[in-house]
Length: 384
Image (cartoon, rainbow, N blue to C red; front, side, top):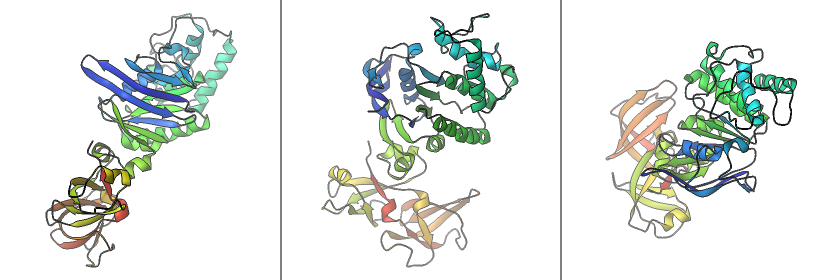
């Protein structure tokens, strides 16, 4: 049984369907991602999980229990916000301790209001000051901020503030950890370092996490599985490599990195996975490894959309090429150097392609070459 289940969750704001029938399941110990562009509904979905928004329809289940209308402070979840939501008038210790104290105060919630000066350092179960101090110190050690307890929040860098926010979330020993784009305010180098540390921390503590981001590279680096969202709907769920190599539709193919999209007519009548297509631009015959389900929705002599990643295309000056099938003659139109890789723009009798290569020795603009599109790297996409 999944630890967390969303069953046909929907939420409207005025005339906007922010979340439209979302169903996902998160397994215990999984680092699960909600990925999509701004406005796709991922943050609203996270807030529904947290109990900060009530869905208009559908149900949220946690550990076999319906928690759809359970108040956020009773769910036992930890949450790290995009802006960290730290209290500037408190030091690091007090910020991290606040979650522990709010659990024991009868109307407090760390997500909606700050603490009053002089609030008691006792939780509902009667935890002592020493117990809270121990949990705060453990949390700061875990995020590599030992000795920072007396620092003011405004004395910290952005990366350190983000760690304090994570420490506050894990100090309460949450049954579920929620992240709303917590790394978006960090510079690129720090963001890359922090995401490695964050994944290692979540796995070391054996936590279950749901992570919202618009950054596909970040989602790939952090998450075990990802739900790709658009316009309030989940379009595909899978492991990062599965999503990248086998996108289910045009949106996922375009959103998760660069892709060559090729319009082509299905020629083969059988449901053999190795299916022949003829491209609408250039008239090339290509063989594609399509699934039975995909072919069921594309009759013979009907156009479909093929996809192949730029890095899967190989270029050679040898007329025999490197593939028996899907070998095209093309002209090199443009070579763009980008450091570690180079993008080659190709024209195969009107069919425009992009290839991503590591080195371009012997290749020059304007010359002819042989382009190979490996059969096992080509896919057939749904346009919806």
